[in-house]
Amino acid sequence: MSIKPTVQLKNVTKVIGKKTIIDNISFDIYPGEVFGFLGPNGAGKTTTIRMLVGLIKPTSGIIKICDFDVRKQFVQAMQRLGSIVENPELYKYLSGRENLQLFARMLPGVDSERIQEVIDLVDLTARIDDQVQTYSLGMRQRLGIAQALLGRPDVLILDEPTNGLDPMGIKDLRTFIRKLVDETGLSVLVSSHILSEIEMLADRVAIMSRGKIVKVGTVRDLVDALSSGVDWRVNDAFRALDIVKASPYVQSAELYDDHTIHTLMDESKTSILNESLLQAGIEVWTIERKVQTLEDLFIRLTGGDHIV
Ligand SMILES: Nc1ncnc2c1ncn2[C@@H]1O[C@H](COP(=O)(O)OP(=O)(O)OP(=O)(O)O)[C@@H](O)[C@H]1O
Ligand SMILES: [Mg+2]
Image 1: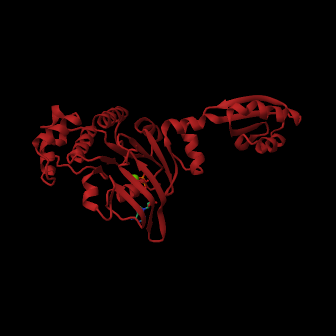
Image 2 (image 1 turned 90 degrees about the vertical axis):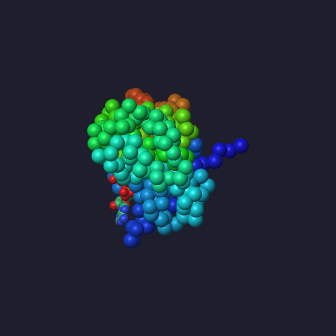
Image 3 (image 1 turned 45 degrees about the vertical axis):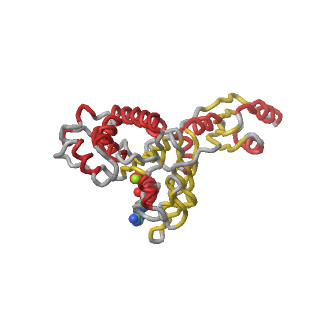
């Protein structure tokens, strides 16, 4: 038995002019999953999302929403999808409910009962009949999400939903998205250039840099993969470096200063490497496990791109 993905991207490329903005990316998103799209400004997050929601066409590759090809079965694919790509279009002199009613006119099968359902889902019940201009940014955000949810989509796409929110607003959004996913089994794609937010929001993360996906994994896996940094302090780091690099247990090693080598290696093999160094007449002073952050991984994977 296998669960079918709700979103599938296969070898998607977007060329604008002579520039390859999105370079052969592939990933799947599954039901009940919050998928984070992390990358610095200009990485290509919005461009990917614009292709997903059918605003622009990929130059090559396939995008499917619930098995419907976004190019060949556009209407069916879009019926399964709700999104906020730029700021949600809201009429600020109307109430939240009136906004939803207006939007619902374009959607067959959405009645006042469904409108009430999404209002409850996004926790706006108490304020829904007030004018939108009296709403906080977080409330407007949730009204936008309510709008995106009206047609009962299987996939919700939010481009940088935390933009402009304060830490409390971000925390609320996180709780809200989690509750939404648990209650509805929806797939949610959220993009952000802020690592700590994605770490909190997402189950799985795709790290994007310069139009490429450099890594996909669960937040847990990514963090686990980081625990293998080991620093070696020795009397002669130059000489030690050759031995360290030759070890089959070392993925990478770099000289930090005359006495220090940073490595990424199988932590359980430090004593074996230690012995090789001692045999070569090198004095090992200290061996230290360096706990790395997701940011270290990011910088390593992207070759120094910056991220907050
Ligand atoms: N229509 C276009 N014509 C030319 N270049 C474009 C176009 N749209 C996007 N780009 C370029 O593609 C790259 C990716 O842009 P995109 O907006 O997808 O990045 P992003 O990851 O969403 O960044 P941000 O975090 O700033 O929102 C950028 O270098 C941008 O300048
Ligand atoms: Mg963007």
